[in-house]
Image (tube, rainbow, N blue to C red):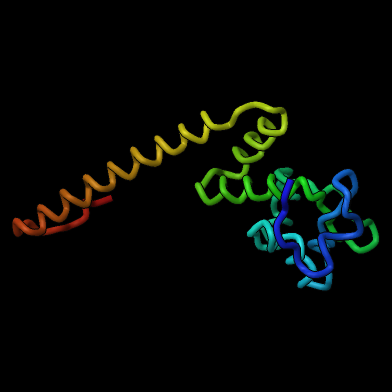
Length: 149
């Protein structure tokens, strides 16, 4: 599997896929910049990696008990990108956790993702109809007022 360009210093102490190789990342205290070494290639901000870990969505391969650094295997990079994509689709973190578990178990997640897309498209069409209605009312001279709550 190709990983493209990695930041200077690589992803951590190992270059093999069976040992932690992504990190050091996300210390629990101090050295704020260290997290970006793992986050940058996946297009994720370091705070998101911490959140994904504490939410059980993307657990590091190793957490150093002394420094709190999180280390990720190279094969977790694709998972990190999938998590990022799901979050960009506004999938709630609990649902992302479920989808990632399904994906890790080898189940296809395309169906649930497509269902989410269909629901989003329906919401967008309803919003478009509302905007068209409001614009029509506005051009007809009707007063645009909000209804009392």
